[in-house]
Image: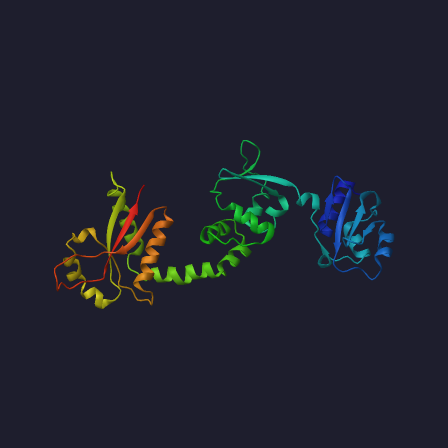
Length: 312
C-alpha cells in the first residue's frame, strides 16, 4: 500500500485538483457530475458537498484505499470533466514586487491571471530575483506597471500613454492586453495613421534630432532658441525650393527641410507631428509662420516656419 504522501501526489496529478495543506482536504470542481445526485455521490465518497460553491471537498482521512486511477474509474471522473480549482487562500496570497524601484502590492492570483505570460512565469521559476527587503525584483522601469496591474485586476484599459503601456504588455507577454490596446482608436490612429504618414516623409526622425541638437546649441545664456524649418509639400514646391532658400537671407545649412511626401496629410499635419514628437521628448516648443520683411513687389513663399524652444 502506498504511503499517504505518495497517494496524495498521484491523486492531485490524476484528478487535477488542489490540495489545501492547512485544511487537510482536496478541492475538486465537477464540470459534469456522474449519473447520481450530489447527495448520493457524497455518501459513496464520504465527502462534503458545498452546494453554493458547486464543488466537493474530500477529507484525507476518508480517502479510499485505492489508486487515483481506480478512484477516477469508479466514480466516472474523467480529466475533461474535472477542472483545476486553485485554492482561494493561495490565490489571495499578498506579494510585493519591486519593479525598477516602484514597489507595488498585489495578490498572487492577480499576477498569475494569465498563466502563460512572462509576468506569471516570474513566480513559477525555481530561482526568483529578490531585493534586500525580500520583494520580487524586476529590473525594468516600473513607471507604467500600475497600468498593467490595473488591467490584471479589473480588465480596465488605460486612457493615456497607450504606446508605453503597449510596450510593457509586450514585454510581460500579456496577450489579451496587447490585443485590446491595439484595437483602441487612439493606438490604431497612431500606428496606422500618423506613423504610416511619417514613414513617407523623408528623413523625418533625423530632422527631429537635428532640430533638437541645434536648439540646445543656441540655448547658451538664452531663454529661447529659434529654429527655421522649410516645409515643401509637393514636387512643384520642391522646384521652387532654391529660390525660397535664397530669399530667406539665412545660411542654407541652418535651415531644416521637410518633404516632399506622397500622402494626403497637409503641411499643418506635419507641423503638428513635429510639435508632438518634440514635446514628447520633454521640450517646450511652439511653431509659427516665419515672415520675411522685404521690399514691395517681393515674391513671398509660405514654406518657412519658426520653432521657438523655451528653456526657462
